[in-house]
Image (tube, rainbow, N blue to C red; front, side, top):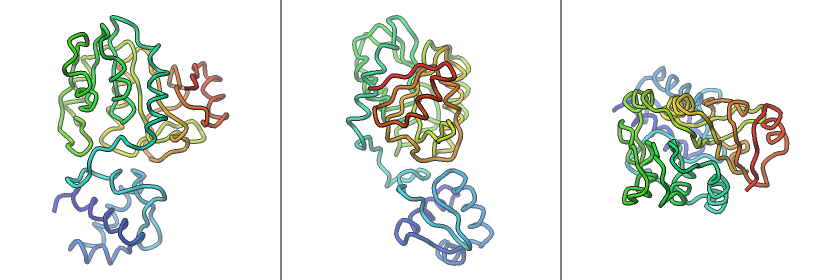
Length: 257
């Protein structure tokens, strides 16, 4: 059993029962207790479960879908659609004709891509949902970054993607995340995506964070960057005032969709 499959099965077991002990998981998966402990430590660090004494519990509000790749896990952009559409629409003024635009992995950026049809711009992405929105539009020049295909999340990831980003110089990057912590940390819940987000930030002149009120605090434990690192926060009217003030205090612009 490969590592990702084993960790996905751990999450499945927790999803079914709510909690599991190390001995139970070791027996079910046919591996040693020390292997299970290492898996639990990594999954806890990634924000996908919570370690408890002698075992683990599924983190509140999370689903198996947020864990490692699994053939049974489909891409799903159906949650909070209204908020995502509002955020995407409010972000449109930050795309100038003739510009190079980086669209991040995530479920909000495809809505923005749909609104960019017909524009004289270049869109760079590793998000296949973004690619699908623009693939037949002759006005938009599309650069699809290479990488390893994650079928369930419809993304390209890995070292090839990171290497491709070193060749990119973008005018603006639209950043997605799974959460924004009270202290201002912008986080994600997938270890494979976090370094790519950081590489996209490094390749861009301006960073626009797309984070509706549902992302405060959201989920995830992997730090992408800080609110002080983004130039613009596009959010909705339910976002906490403290986060909005924190962004403005560091010189960032805030747009309420």
